[in-house]
Image (tube, rainbow, N blue to C red; front, side, top):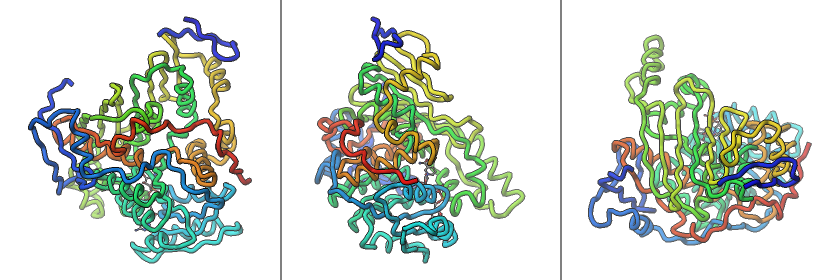
Length: 490
Ligand SMILES: NC(=O)c1ccc[n+]([C@@H]2O[C@H](COP(=O)([O-])OP(=O)(O)OC[C@H]3O[C@@H](n4cnc5c(N)ncnc54)[C@H](O)[C@@H]3O)[C@@H](O)[C@H]2O)c1
């Protein structure tokens, strides 16, 4: 069938487990299980409940939804007063981006290393922002969360601190934006859900890749029906961080290298977030179970030994067991779709988040860049054809702040689009695009994949953090019909 696309300038031709699981992991919902390392207290069982259909009942027994945070809109905050915790590699750029937005006041800066706060303090000199600084030890961030004139706590610390900081902030009446992943164990995922529902505070994970230009365009095309039904998606975080992980001064206290003592997909959300949005996960579809497998470690142990031979600093890392370099995780959804994720941050790959979407009418693939799209059984669109699609179907948010985002920057602009959208929603009293269920679900893939890897790629159920409300939750609003009035300052 020939489908004329919009202005008729172009015509696109559009045509149309192995189930050997012997055991299910019985997850206890909010009673929660830390699935990492020692202390892993899962309870395997093979009784009559060992069926996919009953497992959500099992999981949800311990947590019943206090309040549905999907679609939740907090009262408008005309001026959003922000406190930042964690000013290492990532945090300072967030402060800078936020300083470009109307209706933002930077009220507090915290880092355990005073020199990191000083750098940002200097950068803000001469601006209208008046802020308190917190640098006096490991627990100082609590004082920031307790500071009364703060609306939003923005967290960019090592992963293990994300949930304790987010929970404490919400308990002290603050909305939260937390870097990826929001949690590292299933127990933490449930803590976030329980706290956000009880306090009615937003807990948004800062999955910036949902705001990249190609991903936003694809989401818009999917919403307009050009991809038909979505069948399958792929995502990844393949990024060679081997040297950074072993560097003495890239990450605070070598935290990122130490995370690699766990074996699984530790950083699933960059690849997963945009795919989940296209599939309306938590809002019409849900993830049911996953299987994960990892290669051996061919890189990290060797590097640790090599470094330790010449430098005692590396001796504690010499005899550690490191995660397999490549992890592949496959997820099946309630609607029968599949998602494949890859994670490799330690072998010499070219950066890739894959971003492949297959629908009944179209498909796309972003990495290598530039992204490609194909409709029906035709070849990839030419650059010219793709350009026309880009213009014709430019998402509302890109039309609004896309050009400015490219100027301000942050991974090509997506970080700025994310921050602008978040502040605009808070200022207009709108639901945020990513809620606590997304934060919990996307983060949970890491501990679940660890379990699967440890159990010979066994299949494991994925908790339904929405407690069934995914069946009725509305997809995120990408129209920008409400809000969209936050100005960008020069
Ligand atoms: N979304 C993205 O594209 C993206 C990119 C980079 C990093 N990140 C995420 O950002 C987070 C931070 O990464 P990073 O590269 O900036 O790491 P980093 O080590 O450079 O920064 C973490 C900062 O937290 C501070 N910190 C540690 N303990 C603290 C405490 N108790 N109180 C206050 N501050 C404390 C450290 O001093 C450090 O400055 C991670 O979650 C990472 O995954 C996301």
